[in-house]
Every structure is written in structure tokens, then in C-alpha cells.
Length: 631
Image (tube, rainbow, N blue to C red; front, side):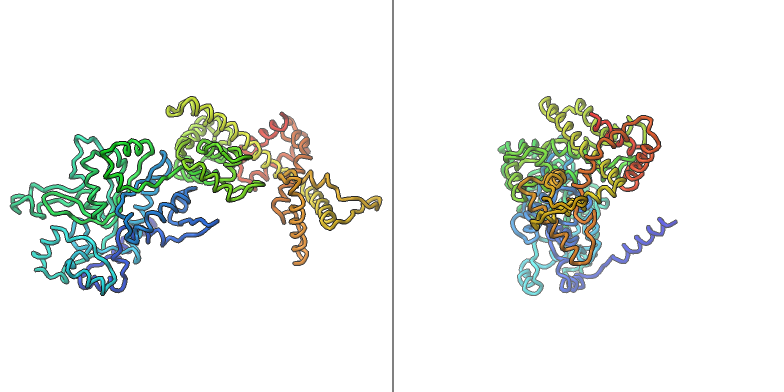
């Protein structure tokens, strides 16, 4: 079977990556590839950077999070540039716990999971290779074998700083197994694995009365006391706590702020000095990224407690808000549906967009800028062009609403309601109206929503419905206009003739009488108004069209219906407005005649072939748009 061959190939590839040698041979590797000696924080940053990045509008997008995190580019850029990057350079932020704070289902745990999975994969590459003293339960850095008094000499020769002391267990092994000969100590390549507890640790708080500190720092193995004679013999200690096993990699604290104080105090020394206390030993060195996540309410409660001041000063808080872009919210839902058992259900185009519009509206704050309502703000955030506003306006709005995205409806609620819509409808197809109806009904069951918020959210559902109505009419408009393509081309050519005469200040000639006349301002405005071109902006728009027309002519190319996106949209809307009566009759006639039936079939076929509908959702769309036009 093919799958067994793949398992076999993977096992062989894993075996090929293994390496074992003496400390002396390991130093040859360090000389050739100094990156193997990088700290845990530097390794995380190198891992993220190795996936590549791109710049758009002066903002950096890291590809490491691509296809997994949507609409959080700014938050992720801040996380990388303000925490991981300086930490990789050994600046003081690496001595801080990274605390991701944000609303439920906002992506905090997903970020941590991606870092853990990324660590596992990166440790299997040449750039991310990690080496440890063989047989060490803490996977200790072999460079700890270099005595303290020789580390300056080592830095001069290798250009690498060594931090941390050799652990009690490896100090004993060095003397007893190797006779103090550092160069003979065996070193092996290790591979991070959360399942095997190598370089990745996870700690979850439980009942404070029953949870043992040994879960973090390891414990004495009482069965070996008789053999080794003392509890302070490192061989009688199990170095199997989460802090031990996370050494060289990362440690995740789930719900860290719910931990009992005795657990949190261990983190003070670990973050500041890079060591922690375990059993009856001297401080044990550990190099690990400590990352935790919490919600805003718990964090506010934590910092209000004066007893937590010492720990609070060792925490860097990174806000992880909800996504605020409709297009990215759609991608979140698509991903969640793809990963579920609902992937076979046909979800009509724009159904998820309608849900996304509702979700984003609940997360936005009312705009303070004059001339902007919440819908315009939503569209500007999503990168839509709105006349009179630019990128600077968007940045200003974000600054005046700094806590935006820390509240509102979470993606899980939306997916739960979509699931409800699918089950209720009992057909393998749902549309935007099904989704919005389910969202509305679900508000009564949402225990955490206040009456005031519920009223606002009902209004947002109404706005989402209104936005969908426009989308639905545009879909049908496009499908109908294709059936009247000759009329669209005629209208476009007529408009271009008038624009050319207007810009060149020429007269036009009536094709029937030959009489000279002024360009048809009424015709041009009737088309331009369809896409919101104002009286003040009409001249610039027409000149832009003429420049495009001239450019095509110079290249010997024909200016066609699709040559200018906004003009095409304007022509479609104008033609649709002119055809509105025809569309009304065609979409709402219960017993259409042969001509109408042919037109309906053409439109349905185009909706299926060109727009992603199936026969059920296409016919539902036509009926719905027919009802809208007949109101």
C-alpha cells in the first residue's frame, strides 16, 4: 500500500538525519555551522524568517503563518519584531515570559501550536539542527562542557557566547563515565517532539490542592535511594518535569494566570537568570522560550493583585485581537469548514461573506472620523477603495480605536450556527439567508451577550442582510448582462465616443441627421453614477478612460468591454438598471413562457459555470433577487 511505503520512506529519512559523535567532533560542526549553537529564542526567529516574508503597503507579512492565520498580519509583525527579533539578538526581552492576550477563539493557541509544529519540523533541517549531550534527560547544550574560565577564549576562537552551567547529572557523568575528558563526551543530534517530550513542554493547571510542583521541575526517584545512598545524588532524581523536557526549545503554559503562586515563582528565576531550582541541587540552567496565553479579563485581574508585581515585570504582553477584515474572516470560516465533516455541503457563494460582515461589525468601534459610518469603516479596513479616503485615514481610524478587535463575536460561534443551518435545512446546500437566520436565532442562546449588545447585533445582522442584497443583485446582474452582451458593448462604445468628444472639447455628429451636438452629459453621468463617480471626479475619470483608450490604440490593441474594470462594472450596473423590468418578469414569473424559460436557464447555467453556484442555490438566488426587485 502506498501509505505504508510513505511511512517506510519517512522512517528511513529520519534515520539518515541521526548523528552521534564526540564533543571534539561536535566542535568541528560548530566551527563550520555556528547556527547550531543558537539560543532557543534565536532558533524561533530563524525558523520564522526561513519561511520568508513579503512587504505590502509598508507592512511585513511572514509566510510562516500563511494559510493558518488570517487577518492578523499587524499583530504577528509586532510579535516578531518586538519580541522574537530582539530576543534572538540576546537583548533583555528574551528574559521575559511571552504572554499572548486576546479574546476567545482569536488565534492565541493556534499561534503557539504553529510554533511548536514549526519547531519540530525545523529541528529536522540543517539550519535548525540541535545537538545535545547523549543520555541527558534535559537534552543539555554540549557547550556547557566548556569550563567557565575558558569561555572567553572560546568566544575569541568561535565567536559564540556560552550561557549556563553544566547540570549536576552531567557534571557527575563527566567525571565518572569520561574521567573528566570533555573531548570524549558523546553528543547526539536531537529532534524536537511534543509527543516524545523533547524540547517542547506543555503545562496545564489543574486542582491547586493536588497538582505537584514535580510536574514542572521533576522529582526524586525513591526506588533508587538504596542504590545511590542519597536524595541529593543526581542519579536518584527524575529530570522529567515540563521545564526539564522543554530545555533548548519552548514551554507552553496554558491558562498560566490560573496557576497557583508556588508554580509561578519558579518562573522568576528561569526568565531572569535562565535557571530554576529542582530538588536538593544547585540551580539548573535551562534555555527555553516561555509562552503563555490568556484573556483580557484574567490578565486585568492578575495585574490588579499587588503580590504579582514581580512576575508582571517579567512578562511581555502581546495583544492578539480578532481579525477585522471581512475577506480574511471568510478564509477563517472556509478553513474551519474544510477541517470539519461539513466539507461536502455546498455553501452558496457569499454565504460566508454575509456571516463575516456580521462578525466584523460586532468587533468594530463606532468611527469618530467625520463622513465615515461603521460600514464604510469595515470596507476601508478590508482594502476597498472609497472615494475621499486613503490609507492615512485608515491608519488614523486604527489609532483612535486601539482596543478594537478585543471584543465581539468569535469565529466558533459562527461555525456553530452554520452547522445548525445545515442540519435544519436537511439539504446539501445552504445560502446567505440560511446563515443569517441561524446567526439571528442563536443570539437568544448566547449566554454571554447582554441585552444592549443583542440589540446592536440584531442591527448588524440587518446591515449584513442589506449588504448581501446588493451582492445578490450584482450576481444576477452579471449573469443577465452576459445574455445581453451586445447591448453592453453598444453602450460602452457610445460612452467612449462621448468621453473622447468631451475630453478633446469636440462636438459630436448625429448619425442620422448629421447635425452637430454636444457630448451627451446625461448618458455619461447615468453610467458614472452607477459606481459612485461624483460630479467633481467625473473629469478625472473620463481622462483616465481616454488615456487607457490611447494606450491601447498605440499598441495596436482593441479596447474591449473588459479592458477597464470599473467602466465594465458601471456598464453592467447601468444595463441591469435598464433591464430591471425584464429581470423582474423573468425571475418572478411562476409559469414562464418559452422565451423567459430559455433566459432563466441561460442565467442559471452562467451562475453555475462562472460564479460557483449549484442548481439549488442558483435558483434560490434568482427567486430571492426577483422578490427584491418586486418590492
